[in-house]
Length: 175
Image 1 (cartoon, rainbow, N blue to C red):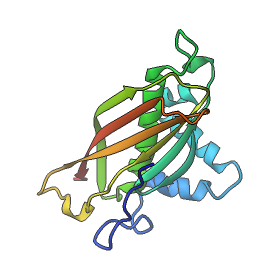
Image 2 (cartoon, rainbow, N blue to C red; image 1 turned 90 degrees about the horizontal axis):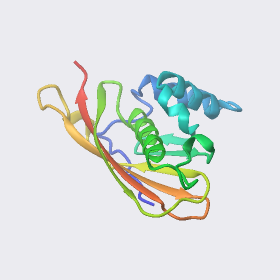
Image 3 (cartoon, helix red, strand yellow; image 1 turned 135 degrees about the vertical axis):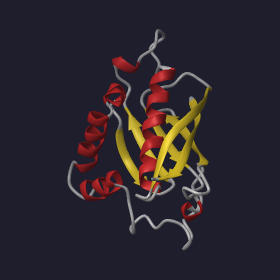
Image 4 (tube, helix red, strand yellow; image 1 turned 120 degrees about the vertical axis):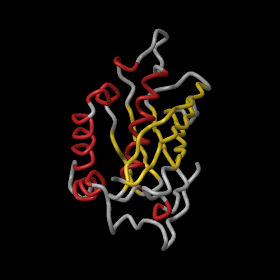
């Protein structure tokens, strides 16, 4: 599993200027059922996510982990996890990583996704997203934006990696 490097002192400190989404996660995750409530709130904001029933396990700068259960709505014609349902889970994991990683002075938009469907899945999936974070102080309105690649590794119930994804996001300073 790839992990991101820790932000240096010249980079964003997750506790100094977090996004509203990350602030909400940090508050709710301390309470019983808080992570499930947070996951449901994200799915209400972006309803398509609800098709995969994502459950955020961890969210911090440079990393997120999401569990998605195997249930009938994610089945394909051979009763395994549908490839596009896995892409939906990848986007959820990427979004949570981005919200935890970017300071409130910056924004992000997905640019593109690359996926590999490596083998049939067994059961539900765990998506682990990671990224090496840039020095956000160097991304200014004057300097323009920067592409940040988020890597998502999936693990199924049997310990296999049935899907691998990379999502590029465009990071800019807010105007």
